[in-house]
Picture (cartoon, rainbow, N blue to C red):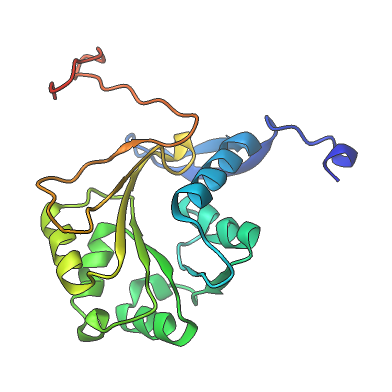
Length: 207
């Protein structure tokens, strides 16, 4: 039990190395309270159940893999493991989605673009939600996605590894009428600050 191992919310859950903006590898130390907050928020926002199936395809050296592993396991959903390097093979991913009735999958936008080019990608499938992060989602790609897969929700999440996977979230509107892509609003127990190039807070409407 937790009391027997004397585990506290401030104890480290994992360390992931990232190059960040400097190109120099650094270990990001994430506490239990941070990843638990992130996972509990995700369940509140997107609600897996026993009929849900997540495809775990992100290499474990990237923090997206953390929620791919633990979100389904903590909610009683199904965890489907892709083969090594399978995340680079659109044909294979389509086959796995169809065979395992995957409902939730993550893509970086560049890989989503490649995925949508496959003829089989537009066929009606079990997919209910695609989560994008790791790169900037463009309006053109979001509109293409909605045109090809109108029954699938598209989520745009943003956050550096240092802030525990993601800190903001936004859902592409179901009517496809978005005029721009937003990184959304803060998730539970986080705050965001909009700063100019000098690191100073800016008022609403200022880049």
